[in-house]
Amino acid sequence: MYVAAAFRQTAGEAWQIVEEAPFGLIVTHGADGLRASHTPLLREGENALVG
Image 1 (tube, rainbow, N blue to C red):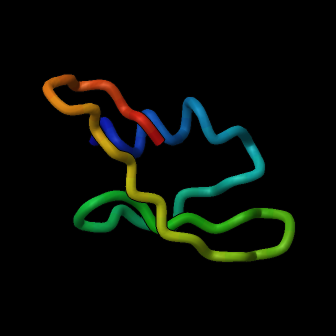
Image 2 (tube, rainbow, N blue to C red):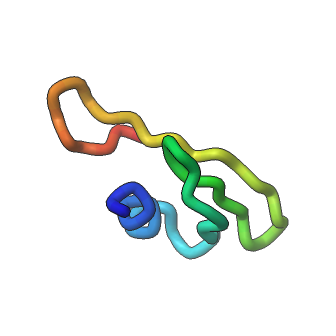
Image 3 (cartoon, one colour):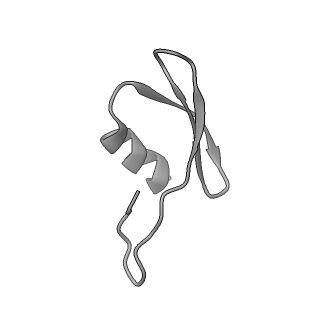
């Protein structure tokens, strides 16, 4: 899916994707094992990821 692909391109090697969630990703930080939910936002009327 494009969300996972975009995250892999911008997140760097420190983050590892754990699973795709319904509205984003659940990721873990490789160095310390912290888990985080990452939900990218779309700009209104565009197909670009904001963050």
